[in-house]
Image 1 (cartoon, rainbow, N blue to C red):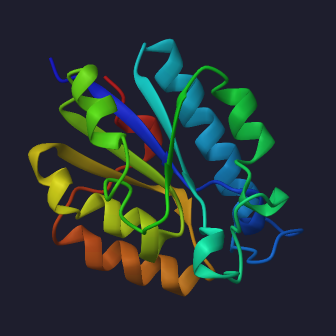
Image 2: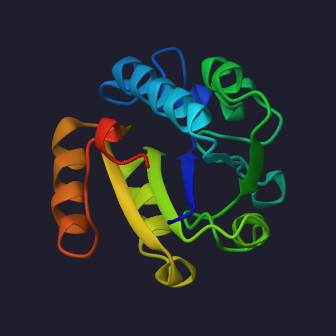
Length: 173
Protein backbone atom coordinates (compact mmCIF):
# COMPACT_ATOMS: atom_id res chain seq x y z
CA UNK A 1 0.00 0.00 0.00
CA UNK A 2 1.42 3.41 -0.92
CA UNK A 3 2.40 5.83 1.79
CA UNK A 4 0.95 9.18 0.83
CA UNK A 5 1.73 12.74 1.88
CA UNK A 6 -0.36 15.79 1.13
CA UNK A 7 1.97 18.67 0.22
CA UNK A 8 0.23 22.05 0.66
CA UNK A 9 2.32 24.69 -1.06
CA UNK A 10 2.36 28.40 -0.20
CA UNK A 11 -1.19 29.00 1.01
CA UNK A 12 -0.05 32.32 2.41
CA UNK A 13 -1.76 35.57 3.31
CA UNK A 14 -0.36 37.60 0.40
CA UNK A 15 -2.34 35.42 -2.05
CA UNK A 16 -5.71 36.42 -0.60
CA UNK A 17 -7.83 39.54 -1.35
CA UNK A 18 -6.20 41.62 1.40
CA UNK A 19 -2.67 40.55 0.38
CA UNK A 20 -0.11 41.91 -2.05
CA UNK A 21 -0.77 39.33 -4.83
CA UNK A 22 -4.40 38.21 -4.67
CA UNK A 23 -5.19 35.06 -6.62
CA UNK A 24 -8.21 33.91 -8.60
CA UNK A 25 -10.63 31.74 -6.62
CA UNK A 26 -8.55 32.01 -3.44
CA UNK A 27 -11.39 31.52 -0.95
CA UNK A 28 -12.89 28.54 -2.78
CA UNK A 29 -9.45 26.98 -3.15
CA UNK A 30 -8.79 27.55 0.56
CA UNK A 31 -11.99 25.71 1.47
CA UNK A 32 -11.10 22.79 -0.81
CA UNK A 33 -7.61 22.56 0.68
CA UNK A 34 -9.09 22.58 4.18
CA UNK A 35 -11.30 19.66 3.13
CA UNK A 36 -8.32 17.81 1.64
CA UNK A 37 -6.37 18.31 4.86
CA UNK A 38 -9.32 17.04 6.93
CA UNK A 39 -9.58 13.93 4.75
CA UNK A 40 -5.84 13.32 4.91
CA UNK A 41 -5.86 13.62 8.68
CA UNK A 42 -8.74 11.15 9.09
CA UNK A 43 -6.74 8.66 6.99
CA UNK A 44 -3.51 9.27 8.92
CA UNK A 45 -1.81 10.74 5.84
CA UNK A 46 1.11 13.07 6.49
CA UNK A 47 0.33 16.71 5.78
CA UNK A 48 3.28 18.97 5.02
CA UNK A 49 2.83 22.72 4.73
CA UNK A 50 5.32 24.56 2.55
CA UNK A 51 5.93 28.25 3.16
CA UNK A 52 7.76 30.52 0.73
CA UNK A 53 9.86 33.21 2.38
CA UNK A 54 11.50 35.87 0.23
CA UNK A 55 14.87 36.36 1.93
CA UNK A 56 15.55 39.86 3.18
CA UNK A 57 19.18 39.58 2.08
CA UNK A 58 18.04 39.63 -1.57
CA UNK A 59 16.13 42.88 -1.05
CA UNK A 60 12.40 43.36 -0.88
CA UNK A 61 10.34 41.12 -3.13
CA UNK A 62 6.89 42.18 -4.37
CA UNK A 63 5.31 39.83 -1.79
CA UNK A 64 6.03 37.04 0.74
CA UNK A 65 8.74 39.07 2.42
CA UNK A 66 10.39 37.63 5.47
CA UNK A 67 8.81 38.88 8.69
CA UNK A 68 5.61 40.21 7.09
CA UNK A 69 2.05 39.13 7.75
CA UNK A 70 1.72 38.43 4.03
CA UNK A 71 4.35 35.69 4.24
CA UNK A 72 2.43 33.91 6.98
CA UNK A 73 0.61 30.68 6.24
CA UNK A 74 -3.12 31.42 6.09
CA UNK A 75 -4.56 31.00 9.62
CA UNK A 76 -7.29 28.61 8.41
CA UNK A 77 -4.62 26.27 7.04
CA UNK A 78 -2.74 26.40 10.33
CA UNK A 79 -6.00 25.65 12.16
CA UNK A 80 -6.79 22.74 9.81
CA UNK A 81 -3.31 21.25 10.20
CA UNK A 82 -2.06 22.44 13.60
CA UNK A 83 0.51 19.70 14.10
CA UNK A 84 1.78 19.48 10.53
CA UNK A 85 5.37 19.80 9.46
CA UNK A 86 6.23 23.22 8.02
CA UNK A 87 8.97 23.36 5.40
CA UNK A 88 10.24 26.81 4.47
CA UNK A 89 11.70 27.58 1.07
CA UNK A 90 13.03 30.48 -0.93
CA UNK A 91 12.87 28.93 -4.41
CA UNK A 92 9.90 27.77 -6.49
CA UNK A 93 10.90 24.11 -6.11
CA UNK A 94 9.86 22.96 -2.62
CA UNK A 95 12.70 20.43 -2.61
CA UNK A 96 15.49 22.89 -3.45
CA UNK A 97 17.58 23.65 -0.34
CA UNK A 98 14.81 22.55 2.05
CA UNK A 99 14.07 19.72 4.47
CA UNK A 100 11.17 18.35 2.38
CA UNK A 101 12.96 15.28 1.06
CA UNK A 102 14.28 14.38 4.52
CA UNK A 103 10.79 14.71 6.04
CA UNK A 104 9.32 12.47 3.33
CA UNK A 105 12.12 9.93 3.75
CA UNK A 106 11.63 9.77 7.53
CA UNK A 107 8.00 8.79 6.93
CA UNK A 108 8.78 6.41 4.04
CA UNK A 109 6.48 8.38 1.74
CA UNK A 110 6.33 7.19 -1.86
CA UNK A 111 3.27 9.08 -3.12
CA UNK A 112 2.82 12.87 -3.21
CA UNK A 113 -0.50 14.65 -3.50
CA UNK A 114 0.36 18.23 -4.37
CA UNK A 115 -1.78 21.34 -4.09
CA UNK A 116 -1.45 25.04 -3.34
CA UNK A 117 -0.46 28.38 -4.78
CA UNK A 118 0.77 29.45 -7.42
CA UNK A 119 -0.19 26.77 -9.93
CA UNK A 120 2.25 27.73 -12.70
CA UNK A 121 5.14 28.45 -10.36
CA UNK A 122 5.72 26.68 -7.07
CA UNK A 123 3.16 23.90 -7.59
CA UNK A 124 4.54 23.08 -11.05
CA UNK A 125 8.21 23.40 -10.09
CA UNK A 126 7.74 21.12 -7.09
CA UNK A 127 5.73 18.52 -9.00
CA UNK A 128 8.30 18.23 -11.80
CA UNK A 129 11.36 18.70 -9.64
CA UNK A 130 14.22 16.28 -10.26
CA UNK A 131 13.87 15.34 -6.58
CA UNK A 132 10.18 14.45 -7.09
CA UNK A 133 10.93 11.88 -9.78
CA UNK A 134 11.26 9.04 -7.27
CA UNK A 135 7.69 9.61 -6.03
CA UNK A 136 4.33 8.90 -7.58
CA UNK A 137 3.06 12.47 -7.93
CA UNK A 138 -0.54 13.56 -8.41
CA UNK A 139 -1.68 17.17 -8.69
CA UNK A 140 -5.02 18.19 -7.16
CA UNK A 141 -6.19 20.91 -9.62
CA UNK A 142 -9.27 21.78 -7.56
CA UNK A 143 -6.93 22.63 -4.67
CA UNK A 144 -4.62 24.89 -6.69
CA UNK A 145 -4.89 28.47 -7.87
CA UNK A 146 -2.91 31.33 -9.31
CA UNK A 147 -3.39 34.89 -10.56
CA UNK A 148 -6.05 34.07 -13.19
CA UNK A 149 -8.26 31.19 -14.21
CA UNK A 150 -6.56 31.13 -17.62
CA UNK A 151 -3.05 30.84 -16.15
CA UNK A 152 -4.27 28.03 -13.87
CA UNK A 153 -5.83 26.17 -16.82
CA UNK A 154 -2.70 26.60 -18.96
CA UNK A 155 -0.48 25.26 -16.17
CA UNK A 156 -2.75 22.28 -15.54
CA UNK A 157 -2.83 21.50 -19.26
CA UNK A 158 0.98 21.60 -19.39
CA UNK A 159 1.33 19.36 -16.31
CA UNK A 160 -1.23 16.85 -17.57
CA UNK A 161 1.21 15.45 -20.13
CA UNK A 162 3.67 14.56 -17.36
CA UNK A 163 1.64 13.83 -14.24
CA UNK A 164 -1.81 12.65 -13.26
CA UNK A 165 -4.36 15.27 -12.26
CA UNK A 166 -7.17 14.21 -9.93
CA UNK A 167 -9.97 15.77 -7.93
CA UNK A 168 -9.08 15.94 -4.25
CA UNK A 169 -12.06 13.82 -3.21
CA UNK A 170 -10.83 10.86 -5.31
CA UNK A 171 -7.16 10.41 -4.39
CA UNK A 172 -6.86 9.54 -0.74
CA UNK A 173 -6.31 5.84 0.11
